Amino acid sequence: MNTRNIICASMALVLVAAIDVRAQQPPTPAADVTALAKQTQNPVGDLVSVPLQFNFNSGGDLEDATLFNLNIQPVIPFKAWPGWNIIARAIVPLDNVPANDGVSYSGVGDIQLQLYVTPARPGSLIWGVGPVFSFPTATAYPLRSGTLAAGAAAVALTMKGPWVIGGLVSQYWPVTDTGDSPETNLFVFQPAINYNFGRGWAMSFSPAITANWDAASGDEWTVPLGLGVTRTTVFSGRPINIGMSYFVNAVRPHGSAEHQVRFSMSLLYPKK
Image 1 (cartoon, rainbow, N blue to C red):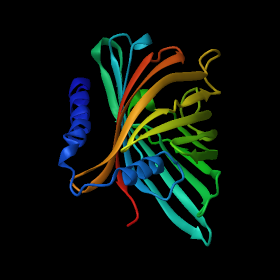
Image 2: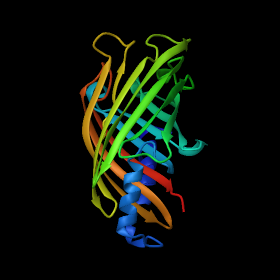
Image 3: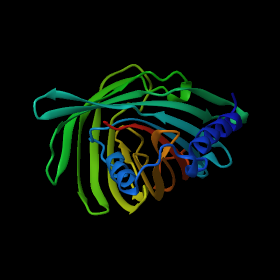
Image 4: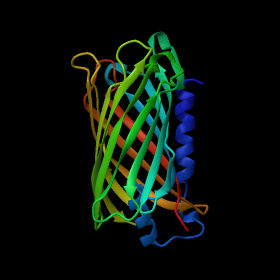
């Protein structure tokens, strides 16, 4: 499947989820979808969800080509022991990477697993800490790192009125590596500022700032800046969150894209 077909199919999936919210069945009160929207903004919330991120990267050194990335990110919370939960999150990337002469490579990227231990009844400060892992599962040549990495992550946030403010930080250190340089020695910092307007609408500032410490000098950092808009609603009886974001990479490594457009859709499974 070529890049154009992948892009069209991905956009169609998001658009289908967004069609005519007036057809929601059954209707959900505005206060309920607003509360649910705030739950989706909590990385360690007690909410089962299946987020899908459709990322279209272009410009910069990619010029007119597009690097497509679909991240499938199931989140499953479960009780570990009295008073504590574990939030398990996997990130499964599916990528289409453009190369020279119109050739592109498609396949799975390195799969990540994140585990957060968090209080079952948090106070005004919501937090979680735990181990993170990156597995050398990439199947397409440009995506292969060959690195098994492990590390730690921490998240903290607070909810005050319409605001959800916090951040996540993680570090993956290489454990073993069978590929070429650079290894996966990855630092991630993701601030999060969300404002909820009501009726499930929200605006967010949540760029993923990354650094690969083993990259060539001057190519370590990627610093995107941008905003997103999301809507939490009910479609055919299923709570979902849909959104769109735009980022520009103010700092980026050689060979990377300058712009990113993201369409997102999350299937939500709140407790009844």
